[in-house]
Length: 215
Image 1 (tube, rainbow, N blue to C red):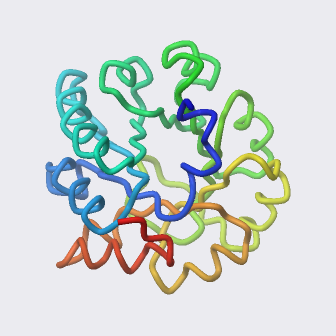
Image 2: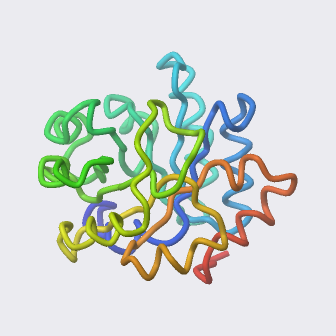
Image 3: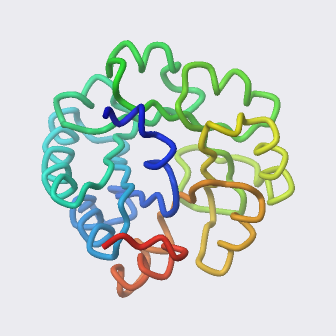
């Protein structure tokens, strides 16, 4: 079964972001901590890196994901996803459109999109396998400043996203906010700071699994 065919079971629970900047330049190390903590959905995010650097990091992290059955999503680089062995790609609403990303990654990989505008959800959903919405709470880890949406708008986003399309809450997610995220109907929650900024990243990962540990 392809990653795309299994998207409902793959895009769920903790969606850990192995972010280059937040990790102090070592996203693979952060990704390994996420995996050790039980996270099975990891995005490699290397803003500002050269393509060859991204590819090396993605291949290294992919090698760690495979034996665990973990899903690896590559941020921003659909043209590198296949070469890296990634299960899919995530693009922002102002980046490549889903049709372009799909053409580059092929029919069997996951394409995710993100938006912070309820009115733009229908456009963001076109060709996408899942949608990320936020920031739900304030965050310092977005590439461009965006207005905080709050839980109420996350609920409204869920109503606009078809039931068979996973919804990912992004922005300011912490362990104590997981009940609100789940009550709002989100299938997954993307996390950078609460793990990357923790003194014990493996323990922080476990705290954010929300009972979905698979390790």
